[in-house]
Length: 452
Ligand SMILES: [Zn+2]
Image 1 (cartoon, rainbow, N blue to C red):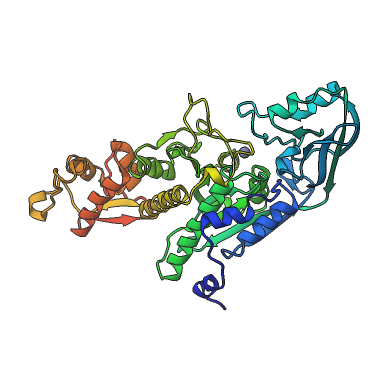
Image 2: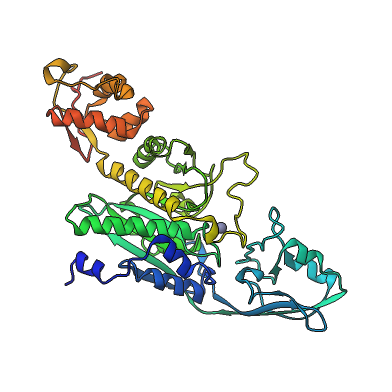
């Protein structure tokens, strides 16, 4: 059997931008041949299992849709002059548009023509997955040029029994408890939403695999899922119910390539260990970053993981602009302007490094068990945090020591003290190096039991 290292050697190692360039323009509608082609290209980069769910498969209250492909879509004048043509850009046709072939009056046509509400010069991304109709998309100027009494519409699309695909990369840890990383690969010819999250997730997975190959034993098992949004998560979860109780937490990655600070959205379970841990990390890792509660920054597949009957605490990391910004979530959102031009490798790398640092904190996060009683006689142990180098650490030293009782994790202590995870970790590590505390994956109270 091949070792992880041997398997890694047989893989292609493209940069995140090279991967984006290779797949971004594919017609990656939720169940489509373009989506499958993109997933197959990514599977050349990392050992990946591809799960397939046939059209019509029941997934809890949802059903896998049919495969949709577009062979041609155009709008022309009655004398044959093409006005809109999906051959020029995949977004010119509504995703999951019904086929149509016929002459329509201008009044009949206009409700089927979509423009972008904020970007008149861009083609909008419009999808009608469950609302069966036909439609085309164009710039505001093209729509305004439609002054003739009638036009000919040709939309050749097919709805066929296909398979919804979910790519899964597993990095085994010591424990079967899993941490889920999720990003969506659907959305034709767009990049930030959410190919950016896919390539960052893939690069994080590659780094974790490289660490494992180098002999660094991870505690948690990591699972990266690359899927079509919403239905992809529901399909995977409903077919892996046995894994759900072992999912300790997760992070949804989306819109991480645009030029804004990081935004961390909490899970439904605001006091979960992963919420506490990541919340205590974000400001230290991106001083301009911000955090918000569940469903207050951007909604996506983390909803399926947080939902009733599942209840995996899944946070979301993006670079979404805060409420109040007129260009929220980002200026080029759901338009033909969401192209590789608005992304760069440095920002993707910064997000990848931030995620890796948060996962490192997550791996470290354990209950801190005291081997001392009473307040520590610090001078005897030479415990000293220089206030000139680390003023926050100096001030926090005694507050942290108070909480080392086997009932608090590092993240609990950081949350309680509203302190940076890394500062608390530094203090706890100092205590551990002196033999004053040790770590436990489960609570281990050292308080005496007394009757009320
Ligand atoms: Zn989207």
